[in-house]
Every structure is written in structure tokens, then in C-alpha cells.
Length: 283
Image (tube, rainbow, N blue to C red; front, top):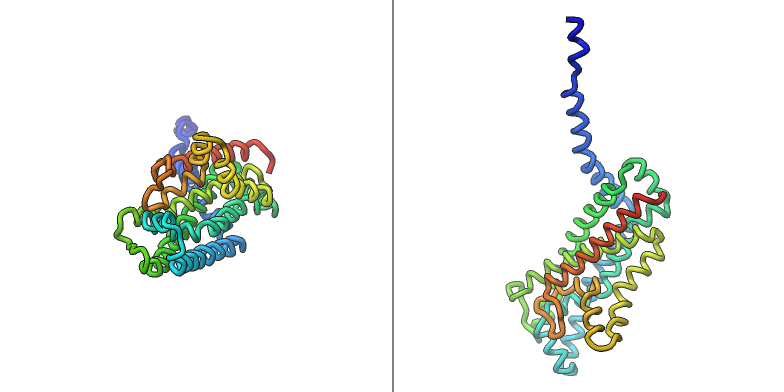
């Protein structure tokens, strides 16, 4: 009996807690990232700015459009008739999306500026899961807020536009465009998060994101011939926003989901690069 005692270690019971700890590690990371996300004041202000800008500008620009309808060019009127939902969303999202860009950057750069990243790395030595948890929390919140704002903008602005261009939720492509607007904003936030992780400095990262969103598209159109058209079409936000249109434009080279796929590919490459860099440099 005494000889058998050393040969009977309790290996199975000891293994179960370790497995439990491993399986619970990512949920704990999610809880940690959610706590950090909602406790930072810039989160509330950025989302509030996005809400006010998008809803307010969507209503304002739609009202201005209807009030100046008779003075608009026939081509502009035709564009509104072709895609009223995309025009409603686009009028407010052009500036409102910048708040999402800023928030996506600050989700990670604020940790570097305050030194909180060191505590995060100590709590999660494997940095890739930490970045994945941060991205997942941010993606869910951005998608939910984006859908609230996109549907809110539509229901506020559509009655104003109905006097010139009738549009309803049941029209072809409208529901897909509204859902696509939330998907676009979610991917835009992750795009900004990836750039923020790569650059680490708030001002530089915000400048980089805005360059992609607002500057590169007009510059690409200056390229000669079909080269400019193709470069412009495959830029991340230019391709991604197609999913928020209820009907394709006459000059679109990609379909709605093809464009969104291009945006997802851009974002995935940047997130992979961000994870690789995060593991290899000091916090």
C-alpha cells in the first residue's frame, strides 16, 4: 500500500482548474476591456459627438436639399432618386464618422499616454488576445451605436425627403443599407484602432486615419485615366461605404459587398500588423 501511494497522483483534478483558467482567460480579458472602455471619458464624449453630428447633420442637409430642390441640377436630383437612403446617411456620416475615427485611435493610444498599457500587459502577458478582446468590445459597441444612429437618421430625415423623393424602409436595398451603415462604422473603428496600435501616439494616429478617410480619396481621383478610378475605388473607406448605399452608383466599380470585403481586407491586414508589432516592442 505504501509503495502504491507515490504512483497515484491526482493528475486529473489538478488539470481541470488549469483548463478552467485557460477557458476563462479570454472572457476575463473581455470584462477588463469593457471596464476600461466605459470608464474613459473620451468614450462618452466621442459617442455623444457622433450621435449629435450624424443625426443633426442628416436632418439639416436633408432639409436644405428639399428647400433647394428646384435649384438643383437634374443630375443631383437623379442621384437622390437613385439612392435616397445613401444620401440621407452620407450627409451626416461624412463628418460624424470622424468621431468614430478619433475614438478608435484613443481606445489604444490613451493607454500609452497614461501608462495604463503596462498594467494591461502585466494582466495579459499574451498581448495578441488582449488586442483581440479590445477589438471585439469596441466592434460590438460601435456596431450597436452605428445601427441606432443610422436608423435614427433615416426615420428623422426620410419624412422630410418624402415631399420630393418618396422612400420607406420596405424599399429595395434600404434595410441592407441601414444595416450596412453600422457594419461600415464598426469596420472604420477597427481600422482606426489598428492604426492607433501601430503608431501609438494620438495626434499622429488621428492624422493618419483622417488622411485615409478624407485626403487620399480626392488625391487618387487626380491620377490619370483608369488608374485613378481603380485606386480610388479600392481605398478602404471609399470601398467600404458602398455597403451603406441602397443602390449602386453609375461609376462604382465594386458592388456593395465587394467594396465591404475590400475594407475588411484592409482592416484585417492592419490588425494583423498591429498584433505583430504589439508583441515585439516595449510597452
